Image (cartoon, rainbow, N blue to C red; front, side, top):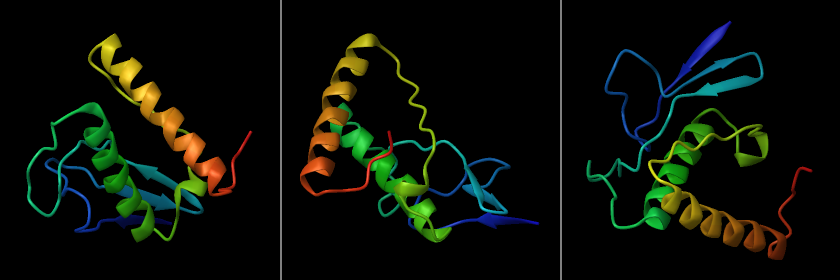
Length: 108
């Protein structure tokens, strides 16, 4: 049996799809963009703030489904340029370093 997941803490779908669908113990999420659900504005200052907003949106969807990032098996980032990839990589390294400092469970 599948359950449609929707939350007002993430951007509402703008097409005929759901934020996520839960089937059994698997959650399939739709892509996220750096849209602030509180203001309806795109966060476009820099890749760090954009990525943070996307991850907050995804976190809201996961929370609504009763899950956390510990349940995530795969993330896919779609980027426009290699320069953005370099900036995103630096940002993700900082996140991983923070997780290790906070002793967050890591999957290898």
